[in-house]
Length: 389
Image: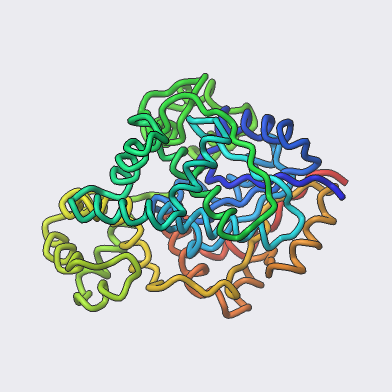
């Protein structure tokens, strides 16, 4: 049996840190193949991806991945705990993945596992509930409780990648999965706006790209990725957030409180706050800034608004999950057959649309194309990328 390592990613865009992680993941797990589950047109932070998932998948294939699938936005656009459970469940169901690797600022696998065990206990959950009722956000409540228990120093658990690392481990425990974990230490600031070739962040690269600073980006990404970014910039084939915001606000203008109240993640009257403030805003950034609270963080609000925009009030049942094959190496073809026997796997937009089970996913793709200045007809012509003979 081939050894298969799973990686969960967004690659928006792919950079030097991602390339290093793929290399170290393969080495640490002793993997013959690396399979990537990647967000599609909607990311975990509740925004459209800046770059086309077709391009992002090809970036990963150029730099060490063997197979890249994108997942439905119903899985990618979730809070950390639900996102991790959705992604890990897919790997678990594949039946051929024996390891999972992820980047984390805190690379001690044993301690991460202890933290995950603690967070799964009813006692810790009760303490968390008390802290949240006192007014703390969930991440701050977790940090405080773990600190009181002597499991994490201040600032350790608050990093997004550490939160995700723990969430992946919790998901594996809930599923009683035999998949082993291989955390790879990550250096640098995940949200830093400053470009750093040694420790790049996707946030800084997106910012520089939108500002047109391609030369600043060049040393932060592999050469093949830089060529794709140059092409995207030249052709204008990337998400225009202002256009997406206009589409969202157009829907908000005719929305009622009940429309928003039905969306998963709503509550505490947040729907009234959103509709009241929407009239004073021109962008999602402004709206989330004016409506955020300790319990409704900007990321949570972005996810809520995205689900409202794409008319997806509730999570799909597991039986409706699917994968979209984006790119692969020829030698990994046998794995694709194995995986497709366990989880529905589409290889073209036409087949996805014809299935009738992914109407909102198809709508998300068409909206992305529209906001990227590309006709939706191109979705039907871009096929799966393949390398090798």
